[in-house]
Length: 426
Ligand code: PLP
Image (cartoon, rainbow, N blue to C red; front, top):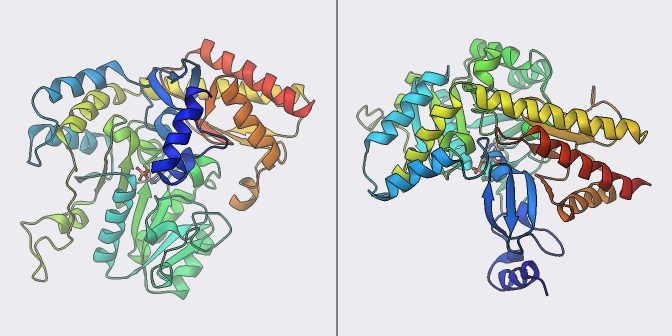
């Protein structure tokens, strides 16, 4: 039995399915990673992988970024965490306030899921309305309040244990400003609008042109709180996220993954008057703070130290340019493989992402449900074949790049992709 198999057997004895995150599940067994550096990682058997998963898109600086590691190591000699205020969280918040157009004020959280929970609580508190409108197929973490509609085309919660009393408060809309305007006309209880700033699944279903500015105008004229989920796009699409790149400012922004330098945690930032609802020094309605938010590990000093080191690297835009160029190279190379093999399939994506669609040579005019319908045998074969040959694509049809990817590594991955595809289709 191999070391990966042995670990999988042990894991299944003590963890449901042997995993800590459902997307890490893999039959017959996952790979167990021992260490990672730059755009590569190595499993417990010493096998090397070119990495396009990159900590679920959190490691845009590449794995084990030396500057981040050094800053964390130095902080660990003082304290990882005491639960007190500290100077590093202020410096970290100042970076975010400088880079994000929507960031008058910042509050740190424990994860992206916690960021979207808090942002929604603020949206409800500010608007005084319980219902939230979210877009079909967009992902905002695993909590009850935004899980309905996460699976495109379903309009239900893809999980047991989510009360109907909660999902009744979530309205799922297509990515169309006109359709959303009509839903707002019909239902005056909607006070908050949530959008994944890339479009669903970090842009596998891109937003129509003009959607973000259209929804901004709609939210402003109707007095709704507009929230951009920039957990993926933040610091990746540009140092100031999609909002800075496209010049559309939400009322609140949710951040995680890259904002922490790829360490555990998250943040929200937003308009002063809304964010001040979190201020314990400004009681309202007999409540101090008016909107309650806690979290033992929010802005832990060891995370803040790493995040500040990351901010310094991320703020110039060079990291994003390199990651974008490597993703463009990957997409072009994969498209050349499809063309050479006469396959009606396409690699596409914004910024440093690469998505695959196997139902034709373009995704124009398709719905989220159509784009996300995959040929199971082909995508399973591809994912497993790539892993066996030493390439980790993040999911069956999507991946990201980092500034640590080089043209040589990307070209090596394209060659492996072509070989794997050949084996599956010839
Ligand atoms: N929002 C988006 C757009 C995400 O992609 C994710 C995670 O992938 C989340 C929220 C949830 O973040 P976390 O996994 O840190 O809870």
